[in-house]
Amino acid sequence: MNPAELITLLVGTPSVSGGEGAIADLCQELIAARGFQVHRQDHNLWFSFGRPGGTRLLLNSHLDTVPPCAGWEGDPFTPVWNGTRLQGLGANDAKASVAAILLAAFELSKRPLTGEVVVALTAEEETGGNGIATVLGELGHFDGAAVGEPTGLRVCAAQRGLLVLKCTARGQSGHVANAQMLGAENAIHKAARDIGRIAAMEFPPHQLLGSQKAQVTQIQGGLWRNQVPDACEFFIDLRTGPDQDHEALAQDFQGRLESQVAIHSKRYLPKATATSEPIVRAALQAAGKAGPVGSGTTSDWAFLGNIPTVKVGPGDTFRSHRPNEHITLAELEAGAAFYARLTEDFFQLKVRDEA
Image (cartoon, rainbow, N blue to C red; front, top):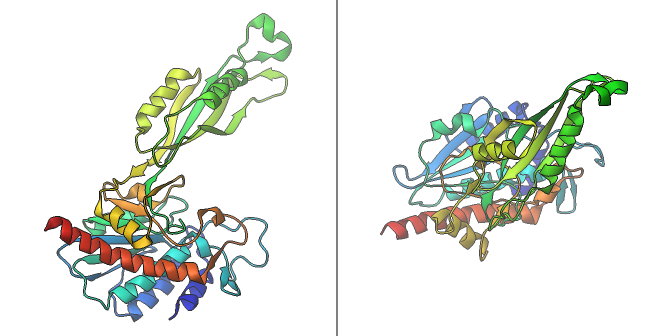
């Protein structure tokens, strides 16, 4: 099966997060037909090849997509080729990475390798559900990992995490006409003061990720137009850096705000891999890049613990989650060649470093 046929099959199989059954079935059949033993848990698949017992490399990407947004030209679930460009939901994020990893694996399995490769194609990355985190314990120890996401084959050695804080401003209710005489405290006004403080907050920049600002993304308060509100809730979304601790950040916000601050979500941890690690050096060598970059988006890297990891794959992050998502054949073929080079370079560097 050539690259164009494979990506067309993948994009033509709907797999909105939580509904990856059909694409998992398809991939399982394609992989098994190549003679691999395929393991499956729910909609997560994995298989291995190479030399067991030594250095182990994880190649991972996700099978699911977000739902289609408005603005698509044609049916987002129907792959359409315009010359050498394929348009369809998930073509860029991240079925091109899935296809490139599979193509590389099929080729690498024919070559003598000094280590073992585990390919994991996992579910629910877009929703943070039953994906890589649920099967990682089944896969064993790894010396390095590459997470396939659309980066234009730029090697991401740092990734932002996600901290969501729920803030509650408390006040005293009363009739609006009597508010000044009663001394009623308006919870929305208190929240507004805090939101102004949040907008002014500055955080130290990260070497690869740069600076970031906390964003208030939702707010709700008040019951009636003629009643002073006694409660107002709002949420803060902060994309964190590898040098920031989520618990400490929450405490810092509490010290600066009048509202009560509680952690709503902290599971997407920020990540970074030292440039001295073999996986980073191998990825840069395979991609022909002088140095790594940072990524502002989250991915399944957040759940890989302390495995030295890079995030890298074909496509462009700015096409993701947008109408008319696409991938080019040249990008896909370059991605497959990259993952094959990365694997061989990684094993060679590990042998050299351990000599």
